Length: 332
Image (cartoon, rainbow, N blue to C red):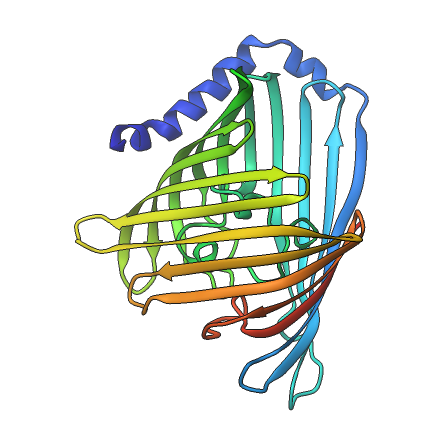
């Protein structure tokens, strides 16, 4: 595994140069007739903390741009305005926490279904939640703890990926490596760098995924981590069950960390769904944290969803609030 990590940058770089040099179609594709799509999503949230403090605000407004030349090239950009308007009990509404974030910006080049190259800034291909985190596409307002603190959420680099039929399903692979540091340090996120890894996902009656990664942590101490994650997803007639588990080891020490969650979604009729989730996080230098979320989601339109949930556990960051949480998410 160490050999794979150490050669991943050279492998992806050499692959890109060689294939583009040998493929004359690349030059022609740049001038093909493009198609541009514009979309995005927005989320408004309100929550009542178990200790009596209330908060509300507009959490995010994301603009998504897609360019496709109808041949082999595709460009994707997501620009997010985070926390443009916030209100907390006992304070006036304010926008001091507002930040403009380049969430994603990458270029894809497709040689075939079995080989596609991506370069730029993209979400780390690990598990399900991190790749499908947009608020209108997930069932709860709050994100599982284990998907927020154990690994880099996004990276600037290169990725080779592809899909091949296998039996009654399809096997998808990803090889990825960081090339540039993050553009800034996000609030409430650990600082990771030098990320590299690989992912396999088999999609059939049950979707199964496995990811191996290595990365460095630049906090109070410089630490190098190795991580293994497993995930699954199954849906049937509106029912869904999914889960992820993470196992992380810190090199040159006996320290281990990890976490997991299990989530169940049940249809109630009239586009209402019941959602339940249990989760746990064991992070370095912090006590173990357990959490349970029970809620309802109303998808009154395909692109709009109202959510209300109750979350237990300590509130250690705005990404893991407790008490009653409501939100309205719109995809446009």
